[in-house]
Length: 377
Ligand SMILES: Cc1cc2nc3c(=O)[nH]c(=O)nc-3n(C[C@H](O)[C@H](O)[C@H](O)COP(=O)(O)OP(=O)(O)OC[C@H]3O[C@@H](n4cnc5c(N)ncnc54)[C@H](O)[C@@H]3O)c2cc1C
Image 1 (tube, rainbow, N blue to C red):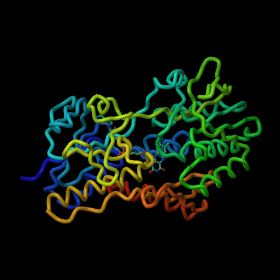
Image 2: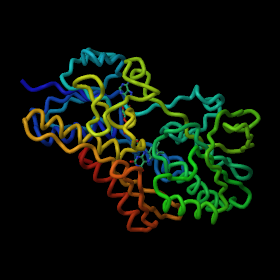
Image 3: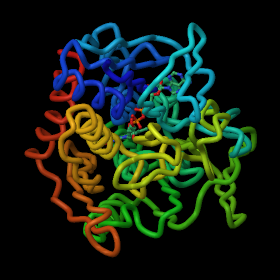
């Protein structure tokens, strides 16, 4: 009998895992993929929506379009996970798994930053980005702060990208000279594993008059007084705030007992949890790599290979390598790339490719190839 594979969450990791297993086993894949949302959206599309470069409907990939042999995609909200029995409860049913893969991503912890929810000014969700798209035209002079409320957070280059794209947005509207831009990040440099990428971003900030406040996070906001407070007590007045909320694993993961310090600890090579037959991949897990789609997808492929080997009795796959490429919007229509490697050496390393039109095309292909692979679009 085919083992029952239940995958929780149809984001980067869940979609890739289900696709590999469907490609390998066809109708016999035996995968149940459970997802509570109605559409997948690439993380970077939130920047496109916020700056009015794309309509929200245009960046949504409805799950109704995901059709793979051997994969049942169930649109259900997961309400309970028992890692001992590998039983999953949803708002519609109870599912039993032989292999359970938790790929539920990271949620936002608004309560961790007093005033953030009231300020209604985060750009890390589609709704937040859509709201800020309508707020941005009202900002014509004063102080803008792009700020991160806690690490780890998804896509470490994204706040830097937001600051550079905001500069372009204000320049195009002819109001940049009347505005000050500050970026607050909890890291000492914009992209710590890659000194060259960080140097290029710092140079871009300096050239555009963007102040970079390093090693600090936003600890609270006063939306009435329009002041953010940093974790060292410094107060920054603002007229526009673009925020990255503190992250943590979804509530259902916290309640399952799988999480330690906010996320699910795994063996970083096999993505196995301490519970037999239970894996965790992507942003929900503590793997030792950044929270980014490209890493979620890579980890999912390793678990898929493990499932294939287990079923076919073949050789065990090589462990997860912790390598990935991230595209970095530099504004002015250009995109750079950072190639990072987390596990090969004693510490993470990263190399940088200068922003170019060639990489703009590469990033476009990154999105369209996955749209085609997962959604046939
Ligand atoms: C502004 C921004 C820019 C980004 N840019 C990039 C980039 O350029 N490159 C890159 O690689 N990454 C980028 N990312 C990061 C990337 O989007 C995430 O790291 C990636 O989506 C993680 O994949 P995942 O599969 O772990 O989780 P997700 O893609 O978040 O998927 C988790 C899924 O689980 C579902 N789920 C959660 N809880 C439940 C529940 N209780 N019941 C049912 N379903 C549930 C969610 O609906 C979701 O679909 C960016 C992110 C942001 C916010």
